[in-house]
Image (cartoon, rainbow, N blue to C red; front, side, top):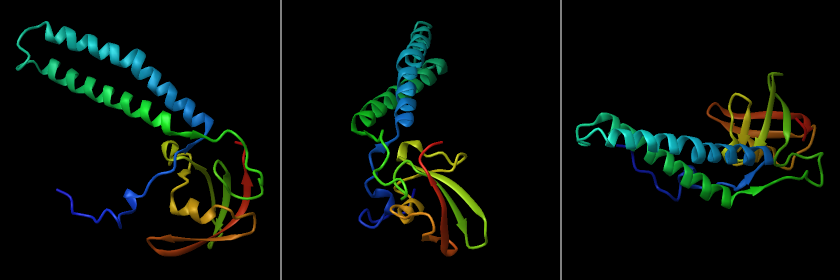
Length: 171
């Protein structure tokens, strides 16, 4: 059991932005297509084969595949709904000298260390590529700033200051 959190004060309950890049939308559509055309029919066939074996109450194969089918159907439903509510940002901002959605940003921290990241939608977060959500505190601190500006970000170790060294909108 988890501890109770006041929904009004819980940052996880804050509404997420519905922005996505064209590449991110294409990736979500590809996942939806794969689940609908390939995975769901394959699992449905497995459920049918397991059901034909007889008593379903003692059939682990049937139980497992039925649960897996329900997970796939839930994921298809979620992606279909999510794709309908997403807003694809397919053009550059009017002022490309400032940090906005889709920007690749290079930062220098207080110790001289370099950080390269990209600001993307909530559905595109990738920690290996250092793509952060536009809803993240770091992204919120950077939005609207330009090269040479300093951004203050609250981290678990206290306030950290970053200086923007480069802004680019192409990979």
